[in-house]
Image (cartoon, rainbow, N blue to C red; front, side):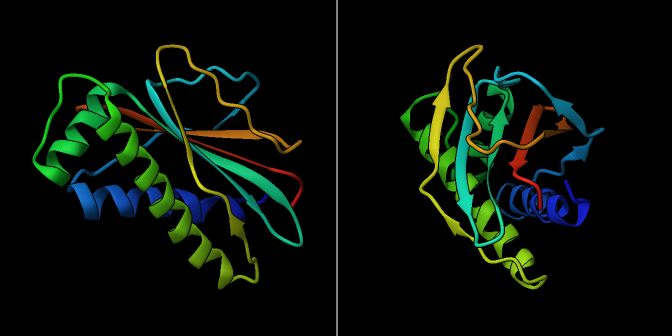
Length: 155
């Protein structure tokens, strides 16, 4: 998978979390992922399609980090993942994908995006529909981790 294609998603995640929640994420080392079990507690998943390719993106938050993000964004901090948290994860997924879509359109890639799905729970699974490699990029913060997965058919 082309790094020029992946970077807009990473840049958009950092930008959205920094701007909306005043939380600075520290990027880790990208890795290939060969299973469907999520690394965190709640995930937003969005499918994307273009004339050139199709794929999906997921953003998985550890509970401690998403609770802190909600506190910073909305001044509310529930004790655990609830409907408000899953709604927030869906909105963050929309914002990240929208930001990446804008950056990619500058490079000639145009996408239609689906409505995000949100899944939560320990050891939940993420099923990417594209038949490509799954790239996972971890980000850390003192309140926890977030993992972005990108899976596209060859671009």
